[in-house]
Image (cartoon, rainbow, N blue to C red; front, side):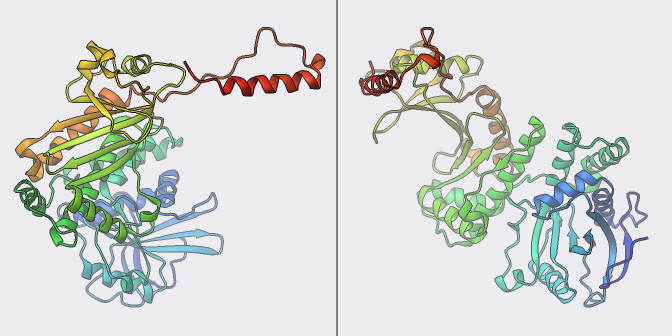
Length: 455
């Protein structure tokens, strides 16, 4: 048996089959997860890598439950678990606190655990709940800067853990047969309602308040609690939607967060709350592997609609707008046109033009007429939710239907244009016979050709 850390007075190694009271749902679910992190090496190291914790080939993971710590461990607030990573003489440690079902993490509880971590020299606190965060370093609960300096605060949602395990099994990342069986059993357990793992299924009451205010022509203050709560809920729902798409596609889908916001979640919340106040709109960007472009999604409170779009450059090897448009329409020939529109962007700073997909299929020449040649296209999907937009559960139901619909009808078919590789000329000369003068003349001809206006 490996020696326990010095600061750990008491603790049981995490077990795949914990013997706990029926009322200890959190303890049972966490014990199974921690045991899998320890036993299924690729799964454990992959999840920890997502936290920015490097775990190499020599790294060993130890997991404990029912822990009592040397300092502060006798208080009422006790963390549910402990992770220890050992690589040679080096170690990294993290307390683990889990919530299942409708239970949520609280500021007071997290403050206590961060203080305990600091007292015992523990590096981090990992929380796991049904609350969602766009990045592990962005926590769903806002704490003071003083608290955050005590230890690194990180977060997983249970649905994220379940999705990562499902992807690893589907992509055959785990080769060992016994480890695949163990991980598959964990997925089966977490997928059962008794485990208390839930998706994000309801916006907060402030969602209805904000939607009603905007519909009535009122304004929303970016600094109000309602606006910030709505933005926070939007983060949770878009993250959950990414996980839904990940499971449907068998590939990891991510929310794209601007670099300036990755290290500053407070600034991100402030910026998006200002966007909600000024534009009456919430936005997010999804990145799906190997697609033509990122998927931009938005929820428009004034129009009571959700939108999804992808933008691609027009092929420059086609000279007319009609020819370039036909290139796009061929990609969408299997798409159901309901709610799909095509925006055409032109040279300069002028406005785009927009047409329903149905109209352009019938008359692609209708897009021409301004004397310019289109430079890029944006395929836009709009779904009017009407009164359901303000309804806390129905909004999520409709959004989680609309975005996969857009991907099925547009995203999986759309391809980015790439110029063809240059071909060797049939009348090329033998390289050994080409003189310096001939090379100079050929270069001058090429420059002249490039300066000829396009037809």
